[in-house]
Amino acid sequence: MSEQPGRGPQIREVRQSEDRFLASDVFEARQRALPPRTGTGTWREPARDVPVYQDCDVLVVGGGPSGTAAALAAARAGADVVLLERYNHLGGLSTGGLVIWIDRMTDWQGRRVIRGFAEELLDRFPKEGVAGPAPEDWGSRDPAKAGYWGQRTAAFHGVVQWSPTIDPERLKLLSQEMLLEAGVRIVFHSWAAMPIVEDGQVRGVVFESKEGRRAVMSKVVVDTTGDGDIFARAGAGFDTDIEEGDVHHSANTSFMLGGVDMNAWLDFRRGQPEQFQQLTALGRERCGFFQTPYVSWRNDIGLFLGPRQSGLSALDVDDITELEIRSHRFMQTHCDFFREHAPGFQNAYMLQSGSQLGVRHTRRLAGVGRIERSQWGEGVPLPDEIGVSPSISLKYPVVSVPYGALVPRSLDGLVAAGRHVSCDANSHGFMREIPQCWLTGQAAGAAAAVAVSSGVQPRAVDIALLRATLRKQGVFLQETVPADARVPA
Image (tube, rainbow, N blue to C red; front, side):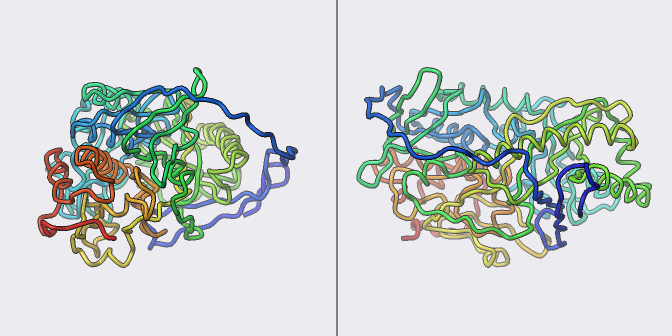
């Protein structure tokens, strides 16, 4: 679609098919707010000695969902753990990114399959900090219950799921306290700059902070940066292919509007479909980029996880800046539009925008194992299974997640977890979600601790020992994996 003259950038809209994991619209703008770069040439940085800040068993780089789970798992498995985080909080996109809708953690029968760290963390929430269906309703196909929870992001394909919305500040605090209880050394406001690599093995990371440049030396590094910054800079292989038009490679800054009545909005959306379509069309005409709200953990807060934008790279500083500029403008245009036109938003105001950009895809590790679409329909536990993900639709069983998806093909001293695990572009659509990041993070942290205690590289850990460690931490695993399983060569 093209916007009216004088109203902003020309926009191309890509609609999603029903076969996509998450149906949504993605927008690509052809005009940019920033001018081109003017820098030329190079500058040689002088060599210098970098002070060592800390020695540890396991260094976790990035305190998002996967990094928090990894740090806790490694510490509880007996390792001395340091976690580096560039922001002032843990939780990543689930807190600073305001992705407070936690995706499905149950299968189509209502069985909780993403457990362990995820279960313990959410069970610690006070009642007022989380909203979602009660356990007795998980798996329900009752039309009334599915209809109610479907409007509240907790029912899919007519089945109620454990898919809550949460208070991001509670999640920050609970994540922090769980790690401190376990003895993890948290280092906030510290940005990992470069891996320390010797003879094909990662032995630590150089980071920048207000103290300047420092190093952390470790026996195993867990890359939970979300973008694979550490393994990529250390020379490990990775994939960047995407499915054109799919929501999972777009980006945006999420925001919340306060002073709303979400129940009134949901009644309008469900009860007046023709008027809702008219409002949506008007929103696209007036705003160009347009997104309707999701529920939050409170009725008086509306959550906007878009508008989602494509054609910009989250590895390019100018593109990242462009995304932020647009997203902050969108927050104002959406607040003004909804306050004027949408039921339940008459008293809306701009409450909060995310401190972290909502990146969905940059790099994916080229691992010794891989999660692929061809596996979705098989329902067979992989030999090195370290977790189980819900499937994307009723026609598929649960998805077995292999340890090999966390291990680089050649680089030693490192495992990776989170949205950059080894998988094909289509499987990335669900493996990037927060529960799956908790799942792979817990497995990576446990594996790092097992590698240290066993005196072996992460690729050589005993799978039976790793699975026993994960079971002890409450992780759900299928029973049919061979006892002598190994990581694929």
